[in-house]
Length: 250
Length: 313
Image 1 (tube, rainbow over the protein chains, first blue to last red):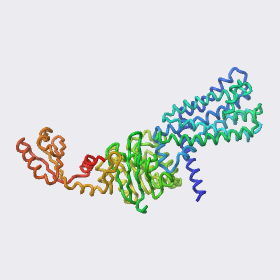
Image 2 (image 1 turned 90 degrees about the vertical axis):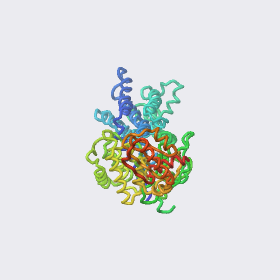
Image 3 (image 1 turned 120 degrees about the vertical axis):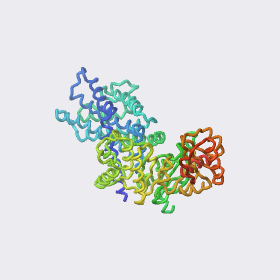
Image 4 (image 1 turned 180 degrees about the vertical axis):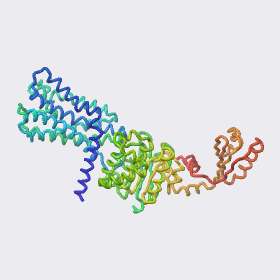
């Protein structure tokens, strides 16, 4: 009986995830914030600065994972509340947790998919990571982490998706500059360095540097542990905050 | 809770800001009946339904579906129900087929059963041919029928319908009404809110009339009519239009409605003779002809209006 309940629970999460994949992967904010934004930021940093494609590909993977995984989750709840489909879902046998986990899963899979394409492109042109398994593990955990981070932004008490996108961008954009992707953490001013260690992007950026054989600050195990911890923290916070604003949304 | 009562609302209360939208509402719905929640706009019908199905949490009170407390076991309780909300809310960027299959999936209906049931429902509701069209391209009537199909995909024991025919054309409204009667025959329990009194009188076994967040009357439509049995309704149709001032002058102590050549007077039965004398008097004085005359008890709409007027709380 318990196994059946777990199976039904997971099945509902998957069905809602599949719905989000169909509805939100090609929405304007997702394409702009999840695909175009990391690409343009990457181009802005590497063009004319003497970075080789081999050196800059890990940067692009880190940026893509970060932006893509956190592009869907901020918009789904405000969007669905506005369209009144959230109310429709809540009149079915699902809870807010199931809806949030479905959204987070769709966003995570989007991040994994886009990052995997970049890894495969790298493999094709002979940019081979030293530890492919660790890289895949890093992509999966970081995508989950960023996805739940995005879900936290969706708890903004507004049913206007642009409000959630604005807040998420205001937080995500500064993180690029302090997370060691383009500027090594050791080169950052001393008063910014502590903030670098709060950023979830720092740990994936560090891990990806390690897997492609570049200098890393922490051990890969530490990166994975911190990312896992942040994932759980963001998940808990996202569920609590979204539950709190739910009544105001409906 | 007796097994016959498949839905039970106990002392439901909800306040939004300074407004008490629902105030201590309690009622039970028996298995297999069509139960109507009637009332003017803003009476608290939709808020009551939203609390019963667990979308909003009441400030006070409890709701039960098939014996399950909706706020403590929402998934279990909601697995028995289908809901058609007041506002059309399928996913407009998905097709009809995708919407109905998504809903079936959430209820855990196996894929093959889901597909067969979806096909049957869409055919029955006359929207099977447009199943591959995106919902945003459909008319409001079709969207409403889709919502009904989505509510029925899990073959629920209980169906909640919030203003099911509101704003629909006559054909769509008729399709929905006949389906509801068919579902009742199959033993489904239906709870509907409406401000269409004729529809409620036609469909409902029992009704609760709400006003300003409270239930002001409850019973079968017939019982409520009997409650106002002391009243008589007179319908007249004259050969020409009548002046409202004239009617006000001669029937100022009675409730009257004038529409062109038609006049409706509601009076106590003991005053009937006096009213008929007055009618004959104006016919003679103003040289009118009576083309139609009906004297009857109050219809359900008259009862509803009197209840709202006479029992504001």
